[in-house]
Length: 130
View 1: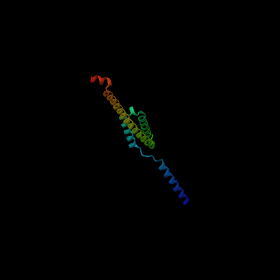
View 2: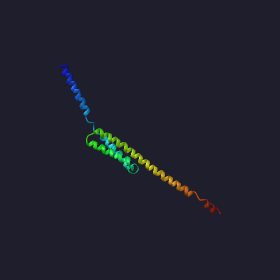
View 3: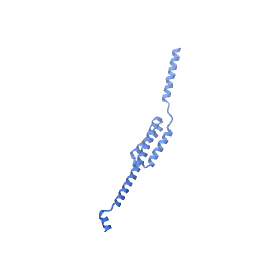
View 4: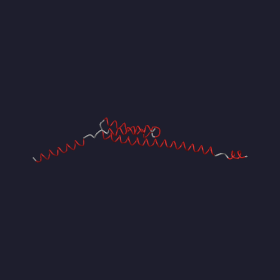
């Protein structure tokens, strides 16, 4: 009789462990929304111009996250959402960097033009004083 109880307990324990292991995690809705916001922010920061590869990666990962959600593979959806968020952040940072470089280049050209305008040729100086 005690062997039967031990077998029943072991069977019950194994079935509980299997049930716990097969239990689905909750849908990562908040993570998916957050990833979408990060991708949108990157798009609004002109990442398509300054960081097209990073933006494409973020959009692909977001699409994969949504596809995994439809298949109820919530672990994969959460992973893809995290990757989309990070790629969106990178795209946004690269876009800001690209814009900053453009501003620096414009100022450098302006400064060079000012220096050029301020430097009067030697002949012009001599003609003005005679």
